[in-house]
Length: 422
Ligand SMILES: Cc1ncc(COP(=O)(O)O)c(C=O)c1O
Image (tube, rainbow, N blue to C red):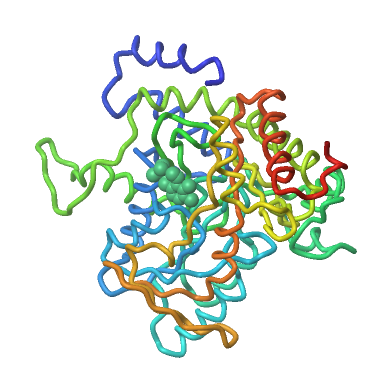
């Protein structure tokens, strides 16, 4: 917690607004809309609820397809099944680890030829890295398919305009040597918050996120009508009448006034949290980047990640130990680290049919729900080699040092020449 949350919760208690709605909710929504620069928002019980409501309002239903990132958390795609639709899972771009815009475009073109475009696209801002909003929004506008941005992990992250991002350096990804100041220049002054520009976007305040209300989410949109409809559905679709009148089926998805009080306090420390997350990333990167076989998650040239989690890739042949060796060595020291999200197309819950991309294989898998995958090899590789390091903002330098020292030792135990790092 940032420090003011308990006082704000106390204020909510004193006002006696405990049940869902109340003044804290209104203030939280106002503060949030201002923070992200998206005018209309609805505070909800979770990010998953937000995605569900967005798909519902956009009319996603039985027999529809919805495109999503395959490299993501399950909550990003479950709402597609809630609506009886089926997911088309698009692979990641190696330069950003987020949805590959080229694959998206190819697949939309193929769908257009078959006269069956998806009902929506739900790309994920992964680990606080924005998708390539400019390109993805442009492509989806061309095909007239709405984008619901899953910005659950990306509160505090921004993206800038492409023109400014093009320079002498390779487009799409920052080099390891790039300084923070050249980065600032590259991302331009016209920064937009993650989620801005999409038809709707969703944020999560789950306990593990950059700020939390213990559990909760926010649906945001430039479209007032969309948010009004989602708000109505989130409160059991109660029609305006003195008695309880229903002409539609809704959900019980609203956030409570008490949790909104926590959210208001948390929003006040968001910038601080982003800075701390970025410092944590810099610490790990400085300590480990020169090791053979270690690569850090790149930062897209067009944006500024909130570095929600520091994630690295371990190539076993060069490093001398694989991702699992390192994870288990950390666990031995009571340090929790986790593999990168297991791609959705590898999840046993899906029966996956593959789409051939550049001559690569077609694949099928048995599972309860049907899905299609477009590509998949990049996400599989990131899952096999990727490790999320402890990134909590309460970590001290000593904590970070101990994580680094375990990783360095892993290399040592493999009997390789590590004299430079002793
Ligand atoms: C990418 C992504 N999408 C969706 C969700 C779902 O959010 P929630 O847990 O608030 O339902 C999460 C996190 O939990 C997430 O990381």
